[in-house]
Image (cartoon, rainbow, N blue to C red; front, top):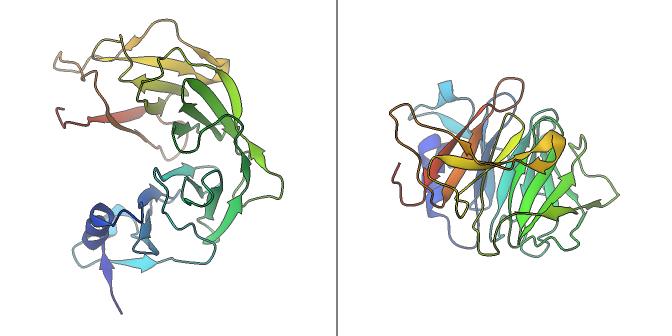
Length: 248
C-alpha cells in the first residue's frame, strides 16, 4: 500500500501528465482535498496535521470526473459543504461534477450552455448566493447552483447576463471579496487597481477601485492567478494575486 504525504501530493499535482488536471479545495472543516492525482483523490486533513510523516486519506470513489479537461477548476460551496468541479471531463465539458464532502460521494449535474463556451472562461462562485459568475468571450454569464450538494434531474442553464466592458483579447483574472467580483489585468486600468462587478446590484462599477499596498507600491497590471480567502463564516474579505512572471 502506498502512503501519500502532503508533500508527495503537492509533487504529484505539479508533475501530473497532460492527461489529467488536478485541482485542490478546502471543505468547510478546513480539510485540504486534492483531486485528480494519477486517477485518485485524497483528503490531506487540516493544516495542523501537515507534517512530513502525515498521511493523506484516499477518498477516491465512483462517479468522479476523469479530471482531463483543459481548464479544470474546483469551487467550495460553503453552505452546502460541496465541491463543484467545472470542465473536469473532456467528453462532457458542460457538466458540473458535485462532490458532497459530508457524504463523500459524487454526482453529475447536466448544464445547458447556450452561448457560454465551457472551453474558454474564467469564473468565481459567489459565497452568499451560490451563483457562478463567468466571463466567456466578451460576455458575463451566471449559473445559479441553488443549494445543490447533489445533482438533480433538471438541467441548469448558463444565463447570458450582459456584455462585459472588455475587448475580445482580454485574459480575465477574477477574484471575489466583499460580494464584489474583482477583474485584474484589465486593459487601460492602471497598476494597483481593479474593475469591480457589484453582485447584489448586478452592475459594473464605473471607475476602477485602487488598492494601494502598505509600502506605497502597486501590484502590476499583468496576467496572473488570483484566489480568495474563506472565513469560518461570512463572505470572503481578502484575495491574493500572483503575477504570471512572479514579479510580486
